[in-house]
Image 1 (cartoon, helix red, strand yellow):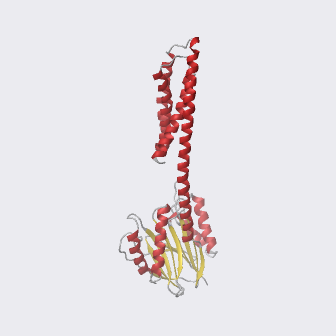
Image 2 (cartoon, rainbow, N blue to C red; image 1 turned 90 degrees about the horizontal axis):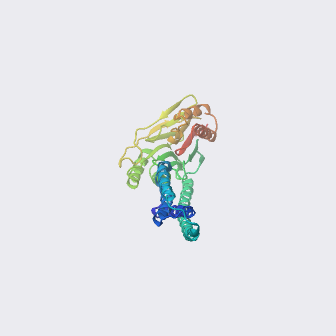
Length: 367
């Protein structure tokens, strides 16, 4: 909450509870000196402001630390009131005059306090809906940039998806088919951070990769160029891990991993890891990314996942890791890719709540 809105909220609390104090004091049948009268009214308002401030800016638990002081001060003031002489019967006119003044002042303070709170609600409401509209627009852009992938390229079928942890995610799943020769470059990237900022970097990374792929057919050279561009545009503490599969020949693939989780290769009997040395994209201005070649046999499958599917903790604090993904790649080896992907997501959600973007890309060579 902005400072000006906080000030208005505190004034609202002060005026509202001071009004309550005024009305309570006015009903006393004793002669109350003006200093004590106003001190008691202000006391109610000040403690209400203190409760409101600690609840908004610090922590509501501190209310319990303030309550003893309020109780002690109220007790002392009440004792001072009890020491004052009772109003004589002929002084009822003084009590009525006091009530008239207190009631008029209380009505004025209630009107002012409600005006303040409605102004705060209007200001903060406009700010909330403006931010909500911006986030919703960013979410729509994210869905356009990271659509569901379900396609066939030559002898390979590709299925990929990304589920953001919030409205906007930093994970990127993409499969780019070059129009000139029909070759494909499929990859998963994980930009550091969360929310809108990582979503913006994700969009920059995708644009850089798409532009570079039109000129570079080798995965390593493409990433070298993308790394230089991404490093010059991003914030100093930002980077992106990436794992990619380049379809260079009818059955041959290039594999490159830049600081990402290893690519999992399943042949139906075992699951092995495919990895290449390399830092994440954007760590250094110059990096050397090198690819390895893989001849994928019929029905064999590759899987790329982000840490949002492995770094999941249950209520006991136990981490899920990637063992369940390996088991699914073996047990569900012959199932359609969409069913395998859904099974991975179901297992992950059953283990614990999603706290990070969850993305995966599956590639299988058809018979």
